[in-house]
Length: 218
Image 1 (cartoon, rainbow, N blue to C red):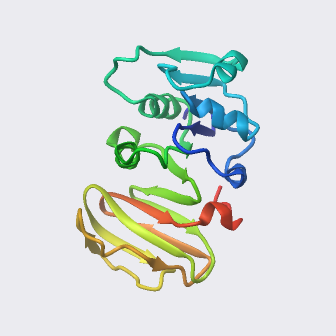
Image 2: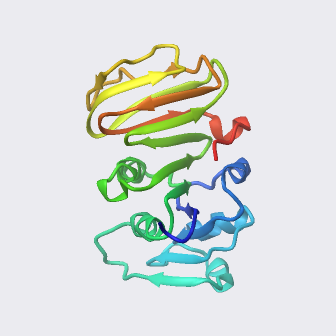
């Protein structure tokens, strides 16, 4: 088992809301992906590791950084966030990605697909994407909310097969959520805890507004 229990990865993009701190255990090992360092500092975190080509982090934030540094050339084959997640899963089994939303649509879509990559199959990944919380579901995941809260189940990287849910208004039983299908969009909690299992494939369980709701799941 990796030595750290939790790793928080601060990505670039729009600044995360201050409520995000409720979802980040204080004992987390903190990794910043380039300008994610500015977001980490804004929420009161110093990064243990800074990763990236450093083309967007502010000079003030980089000068303040006293942790480790993994610097890469600007002309590289991977985004700073991908490199940061790779560093995270070497250190922990649970990764909380903070930010990486807003701004460019290509970055947003690429980040969502990145979280479902098979390389992270041994890790539990949560994504604090602005006001929204997303849980990567590979085999099984438990989510917390309030009755009436929205949750959408979106397949990543292909079909999600054998999907079964409990605690949701429209339950699924051994269902297939095909890539490109909207069948899993806008379901709702009917209990405080919902469970989703997937026999094959990967889902992103998205809870709109959950980061602000005050129901931390970590």
